[in-house]
Length: 319
Image 1 (cartoon, rainbow, N blue to C red):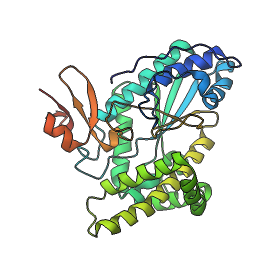
Image 2 (image 1 turned 90 degrees about the vertical axis):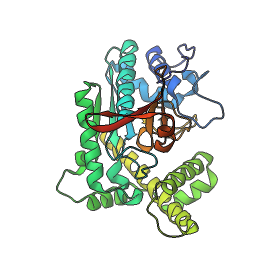
Image 3 (image 1 turned 180 degrees about the horizontal axis):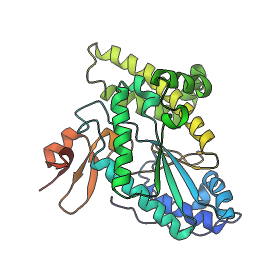
Image 4 (image 1 turned 135 degrees about the vertical axis):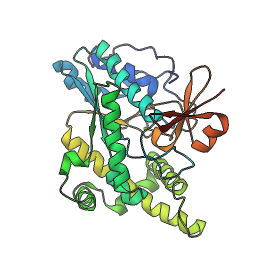
C-alpha cells in the first residue's frame, strides 16, 4: 500500500493526548468523498465524535476495539474478481489492519484489535450471492488470518449472533425485524441528506454492475437495483446496530466514505482509483516498483500476468 504523508498533529484542548495520538494514526487512511482530499491536512480535533469514542478506553488504559463492517464475500461479477474466495486483495488488507493496530499500540500501549464484522449473510439475498459461497469466503478469511499470524484481528458474523441452527433466511429476518429502519424514513433521508444520497447511488451502481446474469431490459435492471439498494441500506443500518450492541464502546470504522461529523470513520484499505472500490469488488495489480493497487479484473489482466498462490488465482503483476 502506498501510504500518504502523515499529518502534523498535536493534542487538542479538552481531550487526552493519547486519544489524539491514536486518531493521528488513522487519519492518513481516511476514506472520504471530499474532492481532492486524501487525509492530508486533517487534525484530530476536527473529529470530535471519534475523540469521544476513544476517550473512555484511553483514559482507563484499556485495549481499544475497532469494529469494521465489511469483507462480506466476493462480487458475483467475474469481470471484477478472480473467484469467490479471498485472494491477495484480502491478504494485503488484513495485513494493513493488523499493522495499523501495531502502530496504535506504539502510542497506546494497551494495544488495539480490529473486529471484522463480516456481513455477507446479512445481504446475500439482495446482492444475489449464494450463502454457501459466503460461508466459504468467511471460513477462508479466518484461515488466512491464522496462517498469516495476524493476531490483532477477529471475525464476527451472524453465526456469532444466532449460532448455526437457524437458517440464513431466518437470521436475516430477525436482523431486519429488530434493527432495520423504516423504508419511508430512509427514502426521505436519501432525498434530504447528501452523504446518504451518495451512499444510495454508490450501492445502486455496485448492484447494477454485479447483475451480470440479469436477463431483462436495462431500465428494468435499474429499477430492480434501486429497490435492492434501499434494502441493502436498511440491512446495513440494522447490522451496524447489532454490531454496536455486541461491541459497546468500540471505535466505529467503515469501508464507505464518511463525512466529517459522522459517528463512523471511513478507512481506505488499499490504493484504488475509485473511492468506493474494495478488495471484494476487485483484484490486485502489483507494479514492477512494488506498488499495488486495486482494479477490476478486466483492467488488471490487460496490464499484467496472473499469479497463483496455493493453486488458486491470487493477483496480477506487470512486467
